[in-house]
Length: 159
Length: 305
Image 1 (spheres, rainbow over the protein chains, first blue to last red):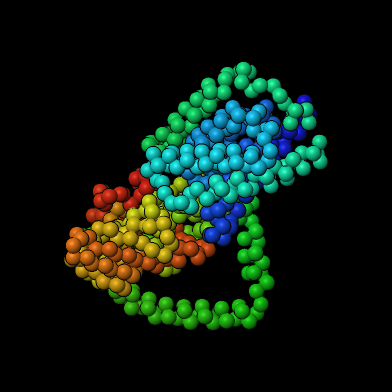
Image 2: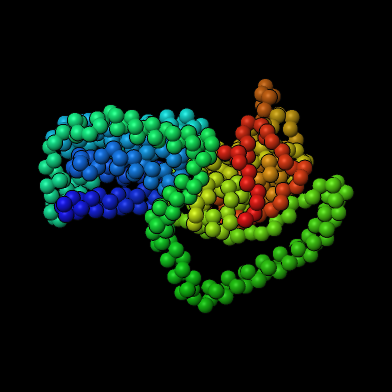
């Protein structure tokens, strides 16, 4: 029970940190290359704590993202939910992959996420089609091993 | 750590299936988006959400506020002196200009009365700070540190000291989101100051460049012309500078000329902007500005409180 609570607290605290990183001001050149922290964190918790980080968690995170970034309410929520569903479906296979293979799968998932955002915002009539839109997906995949090693270390130390 | 990495129970087969749950949450998201986009039903939900995320925005904005404050508090005497001198001389210049302007304003008002059109009167203004928070890099939006409790309303015009800056698109409890005139979704009705020619200026997605798509090759416009807000559309007060024409390309085989302009407002360098309340003149209620309306989601709230 208390273990559960510690796990939940950890998920919530890391989520808040991911949200902070999402809107931290960066120089313009770097801003376009910002990794999708919230999505990476979501994938990490789905693979490591699938009982806590379910679809509802993904949906709530997406909704908070919408409010934070100022997109249509539900835009990020839908994209997060669908990506989370796919990840849940393949979580057993993903968990046994070596870290670099895992990063490649993460690249596909992040591309799916950006494609979903692109389609949704396109339907709402406010899309920007520039190659810069796909840059964060690559950067996110590169950051995946870093995120996993940091969070694994934190989990091990505070066991 | 039993619940963390050692969980091997299948997710599928417990409770509603994965597909059912994702379909349900997906349907809820789509319903939310439709309600938000088509009907704007979710203003109260948005308000609540804006309060939820306010601490995060506040925290991210904190370092820049602290550095600003320390710079102000520990400014040395010589810097303050030079700044004071510069401000005094600027003030003197402005006062001189004001003297002639007072007469002109009076004359203008009399002429407008003759025309039975009431001029725009700026009733009230409010200085708002731009929060140092990065929103979507692909769209030109900023977060202002004034919200509903300060009386900010959707569609409110925003100026800086050089010209028109943008307008408010979302009002939260303590913050509000604004669209810059350089956002590709934004269009503003303008008038060429020299000739009175009316047209529309659209954003391009680059802060230094605006686009004038509806000028024919024969239109009387040249590089250096000042574009001022025409007041049509009822969002922006007329007469405030918007942009200066930087490029005019006339190709005789094309119907429309390629005209570009540079915004007067310092869109990427401002720290503080001004929100204004004004009464639009009756004759300027105008709908159908062409391709798009001046507001992204046309809903005009005009009560100033």
